[in-house]
Length: 412
Image (tube, rainbow, N blue to C red; front, side, top):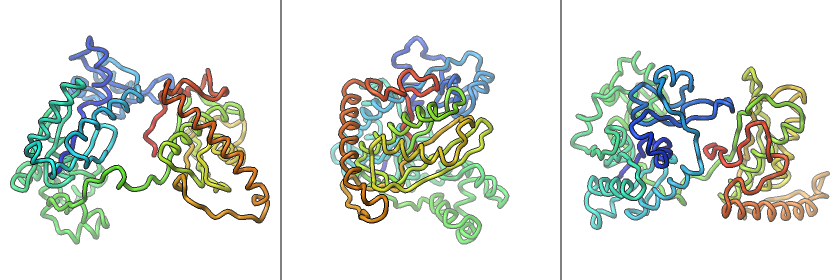
């Protein structure tokens, strides 16, 4: 028995906990227009009723809803509530798999003797989250993960929906094929040209023909429509290993010159290195993406002489890439720094004792150990006093839009 728990308007609902005077009014959480990423990140039901959608521009949303109240995002707050929500989930089962910051699958097969049937458990979770945190969620209950996810989308807000073997054809097959999990707009448009307009149409279509047209995903979507999904709910320790850890920023203004670029790179590399240490990982390579004001983008990467999670080493590698591939006077709109080719913190690696790099290995290892000790001391201070408690001097009081406590934690 699988549940899918989906928080209702999560970012907006968390913000409204401290702004009760805005209850019942259309509200949206957005990026800062001054930082040039002014899009809607989340909206409440009242804003949704005006047609406001996630990822549209603030200008477009206000055109639809002139009385829309815009709130700045506080990612640290959302992660704290995510932690508290997951603590509630773990009271009912240890089989919890996060799908995103506000969605999780729960396998409650072994919990029914303690807490009742799937719908009863879903109702208890909703009630507990509402009573303890003041937030609401929708729960889908089914015999597989795909239908559980679709169940949480079926009725919102604050509802539990059961999709079983006896009713999924009635509930789901009349829906547009775009409503099936993993069907994007381009796929739906192509399917419409084949006469597949509903999930039921897809379920009845020839599987081999779908595979021939869409490749392996075509057969997978046919299976989903027919309730054939046996993917398990995976605990945190069973999830796929992270392949890369990155962070990017669109700057408040175009930046240029080594000093300004280094300021941005230092802040981004600091976040990347911190996440690598948090996950117990190191990177063997660094990748940099740069976008100019005309949205031209270049991407460069390099191998490191040894795996690292030290901020200074990631900064040096990123700056080397930028110096070799970007004119110093050319304006920059966005930079992304990513640690690639990841290895476990304690993984052994083969090092060369020959060539120009080999003679410096011992010295670099000693410097790396000192750098990592310093970075971990900064980690401890930030955990105790907050993300903005300590940073690099070049980043402090910058005017390019790097905010110490609001950097995204999603690009992993």
